Length: 183
Image (cartoon, rainbow, N blue to C red; front, side, top):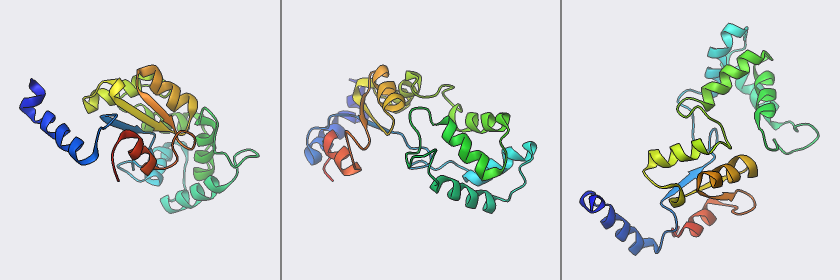
């Protein structure tokens, strides 16, 4: 009854008339640095936090070094990381800033990962909190990510549907088609 007062039912019916049946009410995407841009530029954050750890590079130099490090093969592979991305990211931070202090890395890591949820993937808490913020039940959401353990298993442990980018889905057009939205 409350949904009808808010017009949600009318909106859902309208969407259904345009796009057909929609399989999920919410789409969660593994996106930091890809689809979601932090409120401050990455180089500024690295520089500001890094000053107390001796980081002396300018933001321009940090960004230049970041791009160069990110383009290099990780280990002996072009794959960026497998499972836990922390070692890869720590390598990137160290190359970008010239600082390999583990406390600096932990402070940066906490800045990006624990602001609101205080958990990291594959902990289901992250997915449950996202669903709560979107006002949907976990079974009404699908998560798309590029890591089987952290994205797919974590989302499924929370009760969400989950698709592996590059395996289950290959483009956002395909994601849209799978959830029933015509593009």
